[in-house]
Image 1 (cartoon, rainbow, N blue to C red):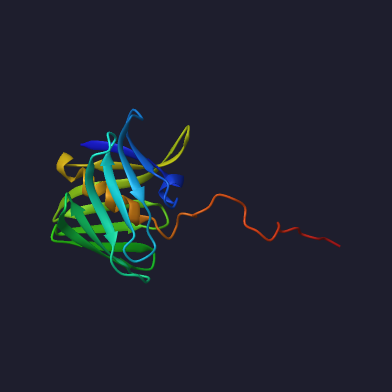
Image 2 (tube, rainbow, N blue to C red):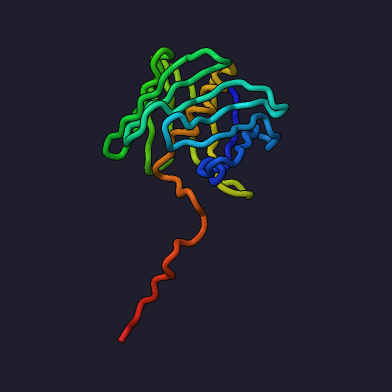
Length: 172
């Protein structure tokens, strides 16, 4: 089992490299890119800068689609769907199903009855992270890229206070 950490505030940033660390906080991977527009993508590299994989947004809308490439070969496509409190995604070609809890930030990826990935929010001494537990080492690139698109709607993009001043209550 492979355990990795991705800092939460970095997942929400646009265009800022994301560092994926192991359990001892040693950098393992580097992710560049952004999402939101058609043809936007996240690209996964080794720490030394060698290209590994990419996830590319192919459609816009509430339920966007993504294509996953390992090397230059397409290995799957993701279709997002939402329930009332849960999120469902299907990864075609890999026959994976993603089930997520939008409230508790808990996600699991299954292949038939086997758990491929578990992603949970982890609060550590140096900030909030997403903890990834990946069953097979060969699935690490795809699992990292999938994790970057899970929490899109719940993570606030900017950590600055909103413009327009602060709310001040007045009492008589």
